[in-house]
Image 1 (tube, one colour):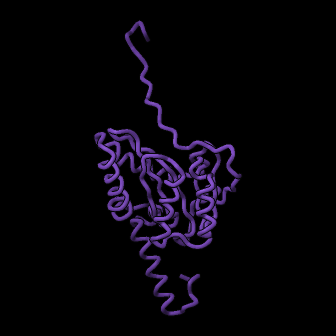
Image 2: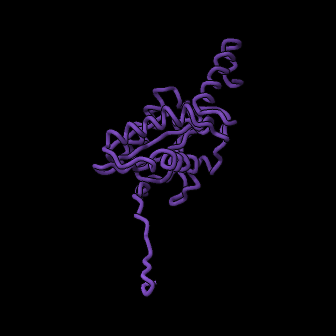
Image 3: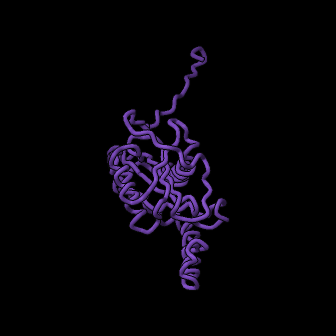
Length: 216
């Protein structure tokens, strides 16, 4: 190759966002790659990705509902501390998208394995679930969302400052992904529509029969 003047091109190393905590308590995998879910707010997944800006990296954490594929909570900060994940869960909970006894599934990164998240889960009646270290397939839905975000928005933009990038990410999630982009896995509906349809059915069933919660 050198005789022909050809040089190999190595891609830039990606920034690692999953750093296992060797001292974290062992948690079960309650999902086991079963990403189906008939009822919203009961089975959630989350992950973190980085976004490069002209001033360095910012980090985006999301919480997704498996039934509707809706991003129900998110947080963007300039560090990957555990508070990033808890902030995204707080948003999901305050919006009414975290049921009592819900599962929150993530990877084994230290942000998902620490005491702060464990305390939040205990206080809100949420069961924590983790996939295997180094297996993106164990959290495929969240990984797929980040792939979509970067393919359909982020990689089309020139590097911008942190504020511009943050607002771009929020607009992608709230205006495009949740409310405009259809998903084959939910019958070619958009996530917000699928979520609203469920709550509409629930309210009708509750008005007809106050004990019909499970039937909704």
